[in-house]
Amino acid sequence: MTSRAALSVQAGKVSLARALSKLGYCSRKEAERLIVAGHVCVGGERECSPLRRVLLESALISVDGAGLREPQQRLVIALHKPTGYVTTRTDPAGRPTVYALLADLGQWVFPVGRLDRDSSGLLILTNDHRLGHALTDPEHHVAKTYHARVAGVIADESLALLRAGMPLPDGVTTRPAQVRMLGANRDGTSWLERTLTEGRNRQVRRMCAAVGHDVLQLVRVRIAELDLGDLPSGGWRRLGPDEIARLAARRAQSQAGRRCQRIGLE
Image 1 (tube, rainbow, N blue to C red):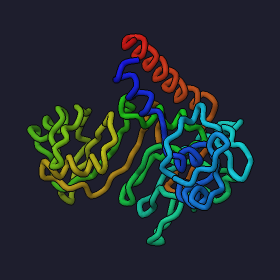
Image 2: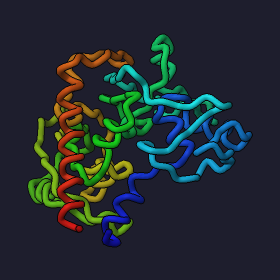
Image 3: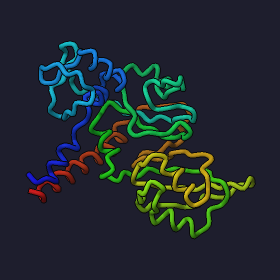
Image 4: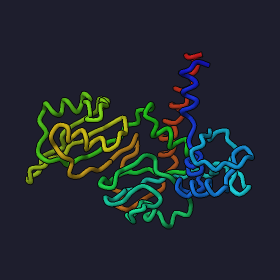
């Protein structure tokens, strides 16, 4: 196996705390407490480091002697996250979390990607870690569409920069993106639509600020083939079989791509 392939295998590992979350047992913070307290074993050996790297597909993980298994029933949820909510299970600052909106769900799900506290819109949550990985791995180029209300009206030259990809203050150059104006408002602000295939921290806000236009409101309206639609703010719904199948097809395409890559490296 070449060094590149070895790196690919290593990249497939996750921390033990994250593994417990993705297997639907508990949140990552709760998992960290269980691991440090000595409740978790890997391969029959007690493991007290939440940072231990494991492969979800093969690691034998148990909590208090009970082996963990992947959920038998796949659950995928679309949530319209309101502004002011964070996507963590708990928040030390006492801010509301999206889990307060899912109080009657009855089982653990984790967010697929993030939306910062000041943003709203479509957030997918699931108990299927493979689906979550397929939708968030940067190499899969999953499209996410946002509507942003910005200060002022962006000039054509600046729109061209946003479309072509641009360097950010941290030295990273963004990928090319689809950008179009949606209209101007009487208050001097305007709306634009942006479709990205990467998910850097606060990327839409940072790119608009780089061309001189602060983002005043940001709504995510689409992830891959899934639209926010008319789901009310704070509301959620279970995805139907056809919707899940379309998202799962992306996972299958990603797995096929990795197999082809491994064959080419051998």
